[in-house]
Image (cartoon, rainbow, N blue to C red; front, side, top):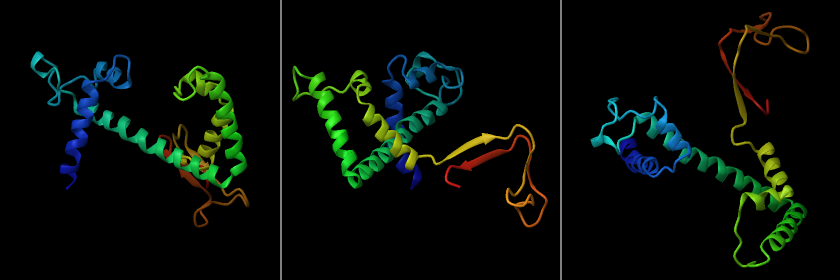
Length: 181
Protein backbone atom coordinates (compact mmCIF):
# COMPACT_ATOMS: atom_id res chain seq x y z
CA UNK A 1 0.00 0.00 0.00
CA UNK A 2 0.98 3.66 -0.28
CA UNK A 3 1.96 4.05 3.38
CA UNK A 4 4.37 1.11 3.19
CA UNK A 5 5.93 2.55 0.04
CA UNK A 6 6.44 5.93 1.70
CA UNK A 7 8.33 4.60 4.76
CA UNK A 8 11.75 4.32 3.05
CA UNK A 9 11.15 7.58 1.18
CA UNK A 10 10.44 9.40 4.47
CA UNK A 11 13.52 7.83 6.08
CA UNK A 12 15.60 8.98 3.12
CA UNK A 13 14.23 12.54 3.38
CA UNK A 14 14.92 12.59 7.15
CA UNK A 15 18.51 11.51 6.49
CA UNK A 16 18.86 14.18 3.80
CA UNK A 17 17.60 16.82 6.23
CA UNK A 18 19.91 15.57 8.99
CA UNK A 19 22.95 15.63 6.66
CA UNK A 20 22.10 18.88 4.86
CA UNK A 21 25.18 21.04 4.44
CA UNK A 22 25.02 24.63 5.66
CA UNK A 23 23.76 26.87 2.87
CA UNK A 24 22.06 24.01 0.99
CA UNK A 25 18.36 24.39 0.07
CA UNK A 26 17.30 21.97 2.82
CA UNK A 27 19.44 23.70 5.45
CA UNK A 28 18.01 27.06 4.41
CA UNK A 29 14.44 25.73 4.60
CA UNK A 30 15.10 24.31 8.06
CA UNK A 31 15.96 27.81 9.32
CA UNK A 32 12.62 29.21 8.12
CA UNK A 33 9.94 29.56 10.78
CA UNK A 34 7.46 27.64 8.61
CA UNK A 35 9.76 24.61 8.38
CA UNK A 36 11.66 24.42 11.68
CA UNK A 37 8.94 23.02 13.96
CA UNK A 38 8.92 19.42 15.05
CA UNK A 39 6.42 17.04 13.56
CA UNK A 40 3.81 17.75 16.26
CA UNK A 41 4.12 21.49 15.76
CA UNK A 42 5.92 22.08 19.07
CA UNK A 43 9.10 24.14 19.14
CA UNK A 44 12.27 22.07 18.82
CA UNK A 45 13.83 20.93 22.07
CA UNK A 46 17.10 19.21 22.91
CA UNK A 47 15.37 15.82 22.78
CA UNK A 48 13.89 16.57 19.35
CA UNK A 49 17.07 17.85 17.76
CA UNK A 50 16.76 15.25 14.99
CA UNK A 51 12.99 15.73 14.45
CA UNK A 52 11.86 17.66 11.40
CA UNK A 53 8.53 19.23 10.52
CA UNK A 54 6.26 17.46 8.07
CA UNK A 55 6.55 20.52 5.80
CA UNK A 56 10.34 20.24 5.71
CA UNK A 57 10.20 16.50 5.02
CA UNK A 58 7.68 17.08 2.21
CA UNK A 59 9.98 19.72 0.70
CA UNK A 60 12.92 17.31 0.96
CA UNK A 61 10.98 14.63 -0.90
CA UNK A 62 10.09 17.12 -3.62
CA UNK A 63 13.67 18.38 -3.98
CA UNK A 64 15.15 14.89 -3.99
CA UNK A 65 12.75 13.19 -6.36
CA UNK A 66 11.35 15.90 -8.64
CA UNK A 67 14.86 16.93 -9.66
CA UNK A 68 15.73 13.34 -10.46
CA UNK A 69 12.76 12.87 -12.80
CA UNK A 70 13.27 16.12 -14.67
CA UNK A 71 17.01 15.53 -15.08
CA UNK A 72 16.42 11.96 -16.28
CA UNK A 73 13.81 13.09 -18.80
CA UNK A 74 16.05 15.87 -20.14
CA UNK A 75 19.01 13.52 -20.44
CA UNK A 76 16.89 10.86 -22.17
CA UNK A 77 15.51 13.28 -24.76
CA UNK A 78 18.95 14.79 -25.35
CA UNK A 79 20.49 11.37 -25.99
CA UNK A 80 17.57 10.41 -28.25
CA UNK A 81 17.96 13.58 -30.31
CA UNK A 82 21.72 13.07 -30.58
CA UNK A 83 21.11 9.51 -31.79
CA UNK A 84 18.91 10.70 -34.67
CA UNK A 85 21.21 13.62 -35.57
CA UNK A 86 24.68 12.08 -35.99
CA UNK A 87 26.14 15.31 -37.39
CA UNK A 88 25.24 17.12 -34.15
CA UNK A 89 26.55 14.20 -32.12
CA UNK A 90 29.90 14.39 -33.98
CA UNK A 91 30.16 18.14 -33.50
CA UNK A 92 29.44 17.79 -29.78
CA UNK A 93 31.98 14.95 -29.42
CA UNK A 94 34.57 17.13 -31.13
CA UNK A 95 33.89 20.03 -28.76
CA UNK A 96 34.12 17.73 -25.75
CA UNK A 97 37.40 16.16 -26.90
CA UNK A 98 38.97 19.54 -27.64
CA UNK A 99 37.95 21.19 -24.39
CA UNK A 100 38.65 18.21 -22.15
CA UNK A 101 42.08 17.53 -23.66
CA UNK A 102 43.06 21.21 -23.36
CA UNK A 103 41.62 21.51 -19.85
CA UNK A 104 42.72 18.17 -18.44
CA UNK A 105 46.13 17.81 -20.15
CA UNK A 106 47.86 16.75 -16.95
CA UNK A 107 45.60 13.72 -16.32
CA UNK A 108 43.41 13.11 -19.39
CA UNK A 109 42.36 9.69 -18.05
CA UNK A 110 40.81 11.30 -14.94
CA UNK A 111 38.33 13.91 -16.10
CA UNK A 112 37.00 16.21 -13.41
CA UNK A 113 33.75 17.93 -14.38
CA UNK A 114 33.55 21.44 -12.93
CA UNK A 115 31.45 24.54 -13.52
CA UNK A 116 34.48 26.08 -15.22
CA UNK A 117 34.74 23.12 -17.62
CA UNK A 118 31.02 23.21 -18.43
CA UNK A 119 31.29 26.96 -19.13
CA UNK A 120 33.79 26.14 -21.89
CA UNK A 121 31.24 23.94 -23.70
CA UNK A 122 28.81 26.32 -25.46
CA UNK A 123 27.67 23.73 -28.00
CA UNK A 124 26.78 21.28 -25.21
CA UNK A 125 24.78 24.09 -23.59
CA UNK A 126 22.97 24.73 -26.88
CA UNK A 127 22.22 21.02 -27.41
CA UNK A 128 20.70 20.61 -23.94
CA UNK A 129 18.69 23.83 -24.25
CA UNK A 130 17.34 22.75 -27.65
CA UNK A 131 16.33 19.38 -26.18
CA UNK A 132 14.49 21.16 -23.38
CA UNK A 133 12.82 23.48 -25.90
CA UNK A 134 11.61 20.57 -28.03
CA UNK A 135 10.70 18.30 -25.11
CA UNK A 136 10.16 20.41 -21.98
CA UNK A 137 9.70 18.49 -18.74
CA UNK A 138 6.89 20.88 -17.82
CA UNK A 139 5.23 21.86 -21.13
CA UNK A 140 3.06 24.52 -19.55
CA UNK A 141 3.20 27.70 -17.55
CA UNK A 142 0.85 28.62 -14.73
CA UNK A 143 -0.19 32.21 -14.13
CA UNK A 144 -2.66 33.95 -11.84
CA UNK A 145 -5.03 36.22 -13.77
CA UNK A 146 -4.67 39.73 -12.28
CA UNK A 147 -7.68 41.36 -13.99
CA UNK A 148 -10.84 39.88 -15.45
CA UNK A 149 -9.93 38.53 -18.89
CA UNK A 150 -12.32 38.30 -21.87
CA UNK A 151 -11.26 35.81 -24.54
CA UNK A 152 -12.64 36.18 -28.06
CA UNK A 153 -12.19 34.03 -31.15
CA UNK A 154 -9.36 35.54 -33.17
CA UNK A 155 -10.93 34.49 -36.49
CA UNK A 156 -14.32 36.17 -36.33
CA UNK A 157 -14.49 38.01 -33.01
CA UNK A 158 -17.12 35.63 -31.67
CA UNK A 159 -16.91 33.73 -28.45
CA UNK A 160 -14.90 30.54 -28.27
CA UNK A 161 -17.47 28.43 -26.41
CA UNK A 162 -20.80 27.55 -27.95
CA UNK A 163 -21.69 30.92 -29.45
CA UNK A 164 -21.28 32.90 -26.23
CA UNK A 165 -19.87 36.35 -26.97
CA UNK A 166 -16.72 35.50 -25.02
CA UNK A 167 -15.17 33.42 -22.30
CA UNK A 168 -14.52 35.32 -19.10
CA UNK A 169 -11.74 34.38 -16.70
CA UNK A 170 -12.34 36.12 -13.38
CA UNK A 171 -9.56 38.05 -11.66
CA UNK A 172 -7.65 35.78 -9.31
CA UNK A 173 -8.19 32.70 -11.47
CA UNK A 174 -5.27 30.41 -12.18
CA UNK A 175 -4.60 29.73 -15.86
CA UNK A 176 -2.55 26.79 -17.10
CA UNK A 177 -1.16 27.64 -20.53
CA UNK A 178 0.07 24.71 -22.62
CA UNK A 179 3.13 25.64 -24.65
CA UNK A 180 2.11 23.51 -27.62
CA UNK A 181 -1.54 24.60 -27.88
